[in-house]
Image (cartoon, rainbow, N blue to C red; front, side, top):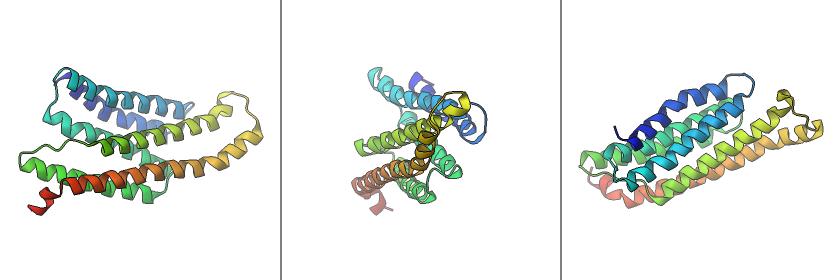
Length: 196
């Protein structure tokens, strides 16, 4: 297994630790979740660049890299639903998009074609990662008093009431990009659907 594929596999292996940090209650749990998510996101930036620069692009990487992104982001969104930070409708929209795109990829693969992600898929992934990081940062700010950092109680109360609204806006923006990228992907690869 080459280095880019190891980085992609490593991103998938980080997911259980990320989920544990989001769902278990321990000191600095949101900080741990953010560090793990940031590390996984960095591997997403590195694996493709290394693969292209060193001519290590493989079919495994083309298929697994976007799959790793999906697993990481959907794990975050599902945990946000559990923690009351995200509407389940967003997750349903994103899941529908991901299953649709993955189905087309599998059909293409059965015909000996590998369909790589397009720019809209990358925009969707970046918007999702920004949303997750921003939500985690807001949670960290809310946790600061429990970590001994002095912050005005009025600020925390106001910020606490704003966090759910800001979180919803961020995940809905990423859901819009998911729909746009999914529609474009399906349209550009409609020939695989017609041949069924």
